[in-house]
Length: 78
Image (cartoon, rainbow, N blue to C red; front, side, top):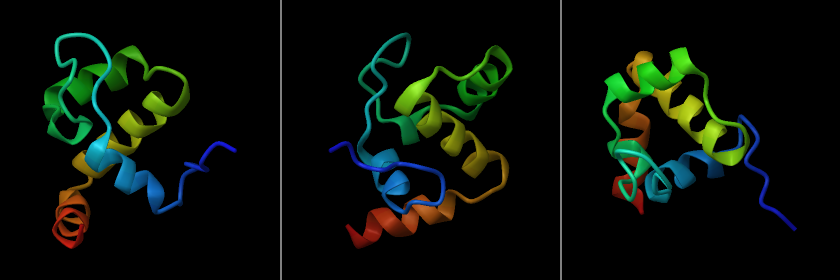
């Protein structure tokens, strides 16, 4: 059974710590390492569908709302 990564699920944040970008200029880099400018560009272009899109959109929201500390604290605990 596929893991539930719906919005509001704390496992979504854990995925952001370890999920690599699968393609493009930043292929292989962890999503949380992507530059904010890239996330802004992606938001204007449209996030991809599926899990990757949901993770990128979540990361974008975290960045634009100054909530990076959530990922930093979670990383320290892991």
